[in-house]
Image (cartoon, rainbow, N blue to C red; front, side, top):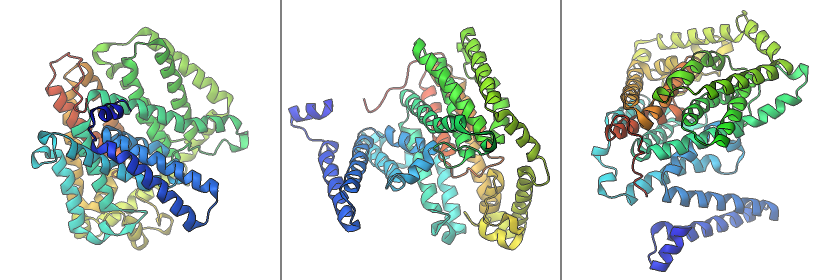
Length: 472
């Protein structure tokens, strides 16, 4: 707003200043047009006006600050069910990425524009992955199946990866992490409230909050837990530190209510890394340890008092039975391998993106029809073949190398790199039981690894100065 009046005083009208009233007018006209076409009442029209006006403001913000395009796309993960319920929001999210890309390309000086030199080895791998999919299975890649067009989905992820590698600085990376933590806690809070009102007979119900599924909710909260720990290390204000403790409690409680056993096992190895490895040279404050112990005791008391300990214990016993989820997943993975090994063509190029569901009808038992492989690695093999698997694995290894090099730089860059390296390990661990190759977080990690390695190379070891914001 300040820059708006400054530009008016100087009589200099930038593109974003001109777009503000134009987008607002378009939003108002479109809302009234939709209201007349649909024959809805005044309240519905006003609701549509408010929604489109909010989107217009969001587009202007993203056009002015491309970083917010990355943030808005990323935080949609823990709010998936809300995104599906909000009018037009599912269609608006890809546009945020497109507006951010256009803003960065057209508003930066010539050395920051989209050129061949701006593409790194990791970007080329992502492009090769898409081209391999299009070259081997053009129909499956471009057809609307499973609620998406796979070529368009991966193109969006490549744009997200490129923008993250070019645009994000330490300060904006921290902003993204804070926003993601807060949004994840907001997504989790309905589960906490619902869990308190459940009776003994209803506690076996897995709670999802504002996410699409219990597993997605638990996975989003694991990522938020890593972000929160990395941010908490650098907190100096006591009230912010206390707020972090509350966030810890909400996150861990909600993971318990989601009854995601992958998340339970992830917590076992994740907590030691969060306590001792992420802080690095910053060390461990005993006050943080005491607060953590207090949080653990409170959470344990709540779990036992609300009856969720019995649910979790019975769940572990059920998982290992002949009719439990573990046996079902093993059968699903076996069917996935059967499809991959069915022909030499399947082994090399796979059956195509999203085509496991179709192929399972001919190879797998009927109980596995209509399901996904529930494994990152087996999905890559079955649907993209050995070549597609190798390309994706190369992107993972490149990201690991970038983050490892940045983690050794020390300072803010080292702290952030250690946190995002843990995010990468979480992606690989949760990939054992989930097909997350088209999730936003892995591709975001690929881009963040490039950015942190580049910025750490421009910073002396031990230096805590954040990178220069090219927009400021």
